[in-house]
Length: 150
Image 1 (cartoon, helix red, strand yellow):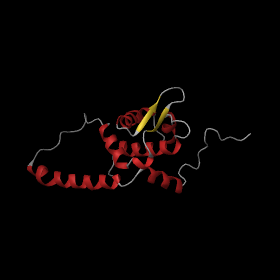
Image 2 (tube, one colour):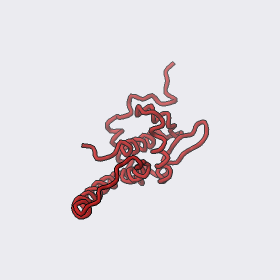
Image 3 (cartoon, rainbow, N blue to C red):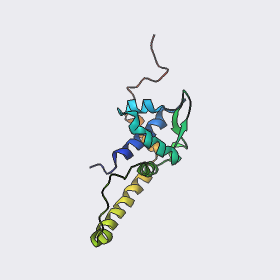
Image 4 (cartoon, rainbow, N blue to C red):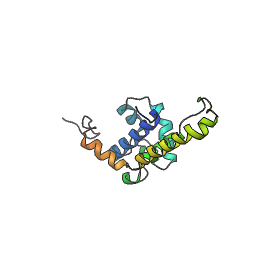
């Protein structure tokens, strides 16, 4: 069972992807979309939330895109999830139940679980995730922009 929203999973994947591919030039949203098999509009709100949170930096221009706003070792998965949670539109969600059971039993349980979950994510940096992606050769099938054979 995955406890993260699809938006949070996408946010973590996008930041790790950018951390791996943003050298020497920023990563275009179009490239991110292609690598994760998503329409670009699904990324826009997540990427903007990550920029507002100071995790990513947007670079304008024809060779623009996104790059990390700070070092990989200074960004945790928890930081990314918190930023992604701010990007979620809660307009379509039903109202929260109001009862003593929720207030005194279920709510505190969920709060403790959330704290433990985020604490685990806070212990994992983008550097850790990049290292694991490299060890597992996640991006080995890709050809870089300057790699070609004549």
